[in-house]
Length: 219
Image (cartoon, rainbow, N blue to C red; front, side, top):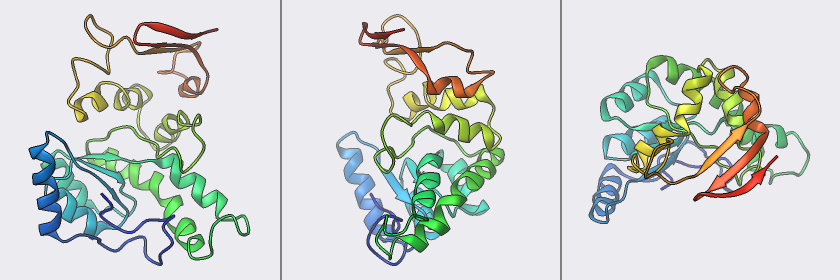
């Protein structure tokens, strides 16, 4: 759901709450009836608090998150999906004349550069963090830059890798199927030529891909 306005939406505000507490609670209750969790796009702090307090599992972006909201996320065990890549991309492209409609440009210039700093503060404060990039806002295939941006903001390399493996498996409630190498799990595996716990940019050059036990790339 869109708990707040968005950057690339053709609307003036990227911060305003878009649901009441009651609406979000009903959405989460209905999702639970179907065995589903709710993810919420959110930039503005008030909309985030409404989402987290009423059962939303993940906050995508979280740009203007306050310390108070970070503490609520810790209490409720909600996960931040920071999408630093998307913030950097839109703020860069907003500087190109006519790349975005005029109403989007000031939002992209304001919001985009703030995500990485917010992420660094959230990590240091102990907010649960999962991996996601918002790819589609920027070209697919550049997703692995997110690891580099997370490390730049203060997250150790091995923790950044964990957010994209067993932590995301926990968020999706699939810990026995994905996110780790073990018997009985899906054989979805990638490999790189350097140790990414020492050189995180190695994740941008994948040399081996296996999906469901079938090798699709082997350099």
